[in-house]
Amino acid sequence: MIESPLTALTHIATSLDALNCGAMLVSRGGVIAHVNPRLCQWTRRPLESLVGSDLFSLYGPGEACEAIRTMLGSFDESREAEFFVPLPDGHRLPVIFSARPVGTSSLLAEYSVVTLIDISRQKKAEQKLIEQNAHINDLSDRVIEQSLAIRQHSEDLEQKVIERTAQLHEAHMETIYMLAIASEAKDQDTGDHVRRLRRMSQLLAERMGVDSREAEEIGHSAVLHDVGKIHTPDNILKKPGPLTAEERQEIQRHTLMGERILKPSPYFKQASRIARSHHENWDGTGYPDHLSGTDIPFEARIVHLVDVFDALIHPRVYKRAWSRADAMKDIIRHRGKMFDPELTDAFVELEKDGQIERVQAAVANTVSRFAQTS
Image 1: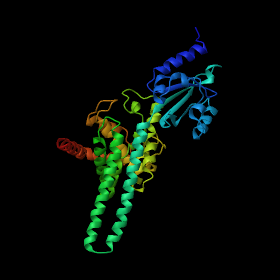
Image 2 (image 1 turned 180 degrees about the vertical axis):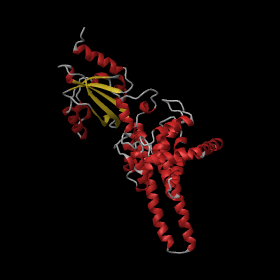
Image 3 (image 1 turned 30 degrees about the vertical axis):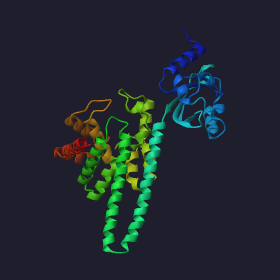
Image 4 (image 1 turned 120 degrees about the vertical axis):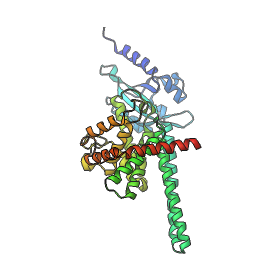
């Protein structure tokens, strides 16, 4: 028996009530036909005050009206974007909304399902990191000004310049690890992954003939490769099973979000390139720009290889840890496909020499000593 459109809408509304995120049914004219309990909880409004009201009256006059008009103007298309939910006390709850048409029949075509995911924690974390980075940049400017003045006086003051510069570098490194661990904290990893990546990236760069100072900079920049994950919802990052196409698209956005966080600071120029391009494949099948070959930044090619290797040999929520031998077979199998062939050969040599294993053991020992003294 074919289900009537009205019955189908009822079933859809019932399904929305079971969702853990906010959800509602909206008509083509912008009238709210149904909201689920989670959205009522978020907005701190009873069900009866929301159902039957229109989106314009809920948001009131202002910048949101144009966004609502745009959404309603493309009602028959699927849309996804950052937005907000107004709260009774005047505050805004930042969300990612996804709007999808319900169906194509005469009645179903008049409604769209809108789901909303709360990203307030990610927004607060991003703002805090931006403020901290601004503070570090301000400190950098002041230190440089003081250094220039000190250099004009005496050799004794020249030593202070060196000390200030060292302090500045240490402050930058603290910022880097703070940013990196903030993003890794959303995974089950506690920051050991980025420490291993730093050392392996530096080691591989040196094997490729990069001078030690530049190789060290590549290692430090590698630490921030996944900083954009602070924007990725926890339910996707921690999902134990396969991702849907939409979830995969959402998680791939972390490359662009990482670049957006890092790009404003000249100090993180190299880290910004790594954040955007460390999932590009040598054969052009990666993301987000489908770059191939040497069009992919050299440092991003390094981080791509060592990141995959480290992920393979350590457990993740969605997989068990692989043996080192199996991981190396997989790296070699993807030579010239995912990975730069020359980098792959150099990495194989490092693994055969035992240098990769020694690097990972050194990180484990450092973390263990730190834990014992904490």
